Structure formats: C-alpha cells, structure tokens
Image (tube, rainbow, N blue to C red):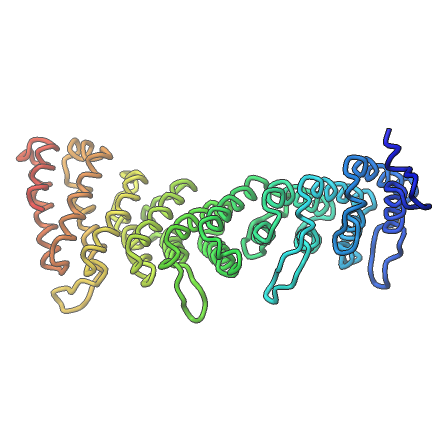
Length: 475
C-alpha cells in the first residue's frame, strides 16, 4: 500500500525512503555506547516492536527521512536524542528497555504533534545553542532520575508523567525558548513542589498558568529568567519557612504574586543587596510570620483556611501595589498584622469573631496606617516610657470595651452580628486615622467610643442604628 516508499526506478541499493529509514533505525539502536555511558540492552522482539512502531510513523511522515536537522534526518535525530538523554543516568537509576521504548514513543508523538521542538534556541548564561527536544529531555531526566526521595517504581512513573505533561501542556503550544523556560520553572527545585508521590497535574497546571500570565505580560522576562525564578523560590521559601503545613498553597500564591507583579513590575521589583527582590514577596513573608506567630497561652487567635489565607495574601499584595512604601519597609507589615492578631487576644475564646471581620480589621489597619503613619509608632505613656504601638493599643481598648464582662448580655448578643461589628470597626479605624495619632488623640477616640457604647448598654441609646449614627457624628 506504500510501494513508493520502498521502490523508485532511479534509486540505487538502499536509497529508497523505507530502506534508508530501516538502516538509520538499526544503526541507532545497534550502536554500542561509549565507555562509561549507558543505553538499554534491547532484545530482538523489543527492536522489532520499536521498528514496527517507527515504520507506522514514517509512512505517515516520509519527510522524517528526507528532511534534515543538523545534517541528520528527523528520524535519526529523534532516536539519537532519546538515546543521548540516557548517557548520564547513574547505574543505580537505570531502567528497563520497555520503559525506554515507551519514552521513545512519547518523543515520537511529541515531534509528530509539534515538529518545531527540533528547532534550536539560545539557552543558559552563555547563550549556548541547544535543540529544544534535547534540552527538554535533559531537564526532565535531571529532575526525575536524580530525585532521591522518589521510589524506583515511582521514579519511572514520574518520568513518564513529566514527559507527557511537558510535551502536551507546554512544548506543543510553546515550541520555543519560552516553552523551555516554563518547563525549567516547573522543575525548578526551589519551588518546593512535592512530586515524590507522583506528578500532580493540577499543581503543574496552576504553576504553568501563573508563569504564562507574567511572561505574556512581560516578554522580556523570557531573557531575564533569573527574575522570575527568584519570585518562585522566594515565595516557596516564605511559605516553607512560616507555614510549613501549607505547601500546597505555593502554586496559587505564586499565581497571585505573578498576577500583581505583571501589572506593576516597574516598581514592585527592586534591588536589594545586589539582588532583584519582589516587594510583594517581602510583604508575603512578613504577613505569614504574623499569621504563624503563636498567641499568648490560653488566648484566642483566628485559624484560617487555605482560601481565607489566600484572600489575606491577595489583599496585602493589593495594599503594597497601592502604596509601595509598605514593601520598601516590609517590617511594618508584620508590625501591623501582628498588632491586629495580638489585640484579638483580648477577645474571650467563647466570643471569637468571624474570620471575615479579622480580614476587615487587617484591611482597615492598612488604610488607617497609610493615612496616619503614627499608628505604627509606640505610644508614650504617662510614665514617660513607650508602650505598645498605637494601633494595637487602640484596638485592644476597642475589644475590651465591646467584650467587657459587665456588659448587658442581651446587648452583647446584638453586637455579635457581623454587620454590626463591621460598622463599629469601620467607625473606630476611621476615627483613629483622622486624628493626630498620639496618645491624647487616641484616648479621646477611645473615650468617645466607650461612652457611646456604655450609653447603648444602659439603654440611654435605644438601638444599634442610633448608636451607629451617634458614632458617625463623632468622626
């Protein structure tokens, strides 16, 4: 059915397409490796299986024999590249001939789907020219074969899954330097992505999508890939150091950081100690430090779900983008967030407030401190000594007033409504931010709030609506 591939009138011995292909296949598969190198030993039946599978591909793609890549036919290039990737595999990590055959079929499928992965691109610090398929296999093998924590069986599964994902999800759509960079980022050791129990496709897709977002927005980062690697490694380190039980958050947090960075890269990326740093990552680290800090023994502290923690990270990132000074003075972030959490320790455990209100407190705290920076400074006490920072001092008095044991139980029940607490927080944070920010000004706000709240508790102020109207009139 394909006689033209086997016979041509003017062809000499061994010059027809299929006979040439057979020669190239047997030459590649039968060549002994150099001393110190390795390739799987194939049985006759395994060679026949490989030749049969390759023959079907050549019938569909005769150009694999006639077209040239680096003075080799495409067929020879695929075979030699696949075999060449095995050269540096250490003896204790080697796999079976059947595994090699499966990987070869995946490589053939990849080239058939995207022939451009046989193109060459500049790569590395010296801009060395490499073939995309060759470099991709190097990256995949280096990651999966040398992964010490992966069991021998799991290692082969990981290798196969990575080859499939890399070709299908990355290189098929990006047969270029960007595709190699995306693959390199996926396999970048400092991401702390855990593939020891097999490749997590969902996690891989998340990281891939976030990297594509920033690379599409800022194409120059394909060249300056160290910047994007720093973002990934620093983000992973911040999570790994502060909330070690939340490593599954890494891809999503990276996505958030990338998204905000892409839109604000010119002032989010800064130089610190001769290294490019990301203000959002610095803010992330400080936020997580405050979240992870242990409360005083026996005191209450909110515990966040992954989605709630992501929401807080997103909110803090937006505040930094709005006011980059937060990122340039990142210690103020842990000061602020830590002060909110410390003030919450005055809330009785049995009357814990919803996490949504905690988020509001943090957000309102950022806005208040952006308006009045003195809120981040220690207040001067009557003794002449300095006490807590102003925002913590104020919030502790706020919660002590609301949750005083002597308060009317029915009134406290009414105050427990989230919308009411939100309104009280909004009033209070606005009031302390619009004043002078020193202790007399803060005490004036605290005193006004306490008096109005006590009037409500004693029914002098008849309803919550009337209380809120009274408080609004004081701002």
